[in-house]
Image (cartoon, rainbow, N blue to C red):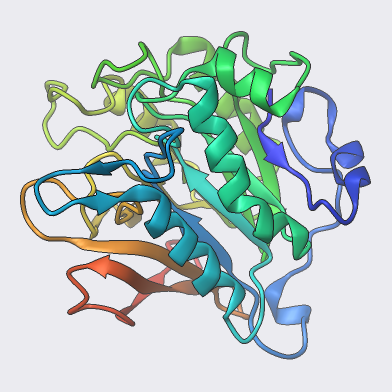
Length: 305
């Protein structure tokens, strides 16, 4: 099942979904063909919303609902709106209760009211059943038991994967069936610059590290030879970090909800594809936490461009 929150102003948005959620049946608008400000995608991760909007964590009383509200306000205050918003897992605080998702949907409603599509994927603190019920969605899984999809936005293709293995257990797994779906989805559009989004971070070691994506090696075997895949974007570690492996950009998004032990920026990122399809700019927007890198811009050069 693809997890798309259509703009509330045009409910027919979902009617363009291709069978199995593999792609939106919309024409791809290349950034180079657009006039005016360059289009971009708003990227969020690890919102960790609790049913109680006053819920706080840590000794410094971090309020996750306040942070997501601040991110939404900041997105809506941008000179131009994003082409889409993507939230990369751990929507809920701990184990994906119905009230958590009701509060999450309430907080992102202003984005939808403004006409922005919101795309979601799941992390280890989510639960598919309560989320499906909160969205009042029918099951139409392209990969049975997993929420996967691909959409075109801002001149790039976004492929969203589901790495939730067991609720409230730290490790992530894609599985053979989902990896097979991914390979076919990528091969169907080899000419389109693609960004893959998943909640769990790739393992930094050959032996899967605790808490990481346990089938990292198998995922990279799919991504490396398919040069249209330019970046792998993920959350989970609540750390703002970038690196490259064989020309593939690995982007660890900052958390929205809270940081772990060390102060980290809390906020979101603008992914702005270049008009000539040679790369993108990643811009950090901080709403809390360590704000020393607020506004930092990172230039990403696309491999094979």
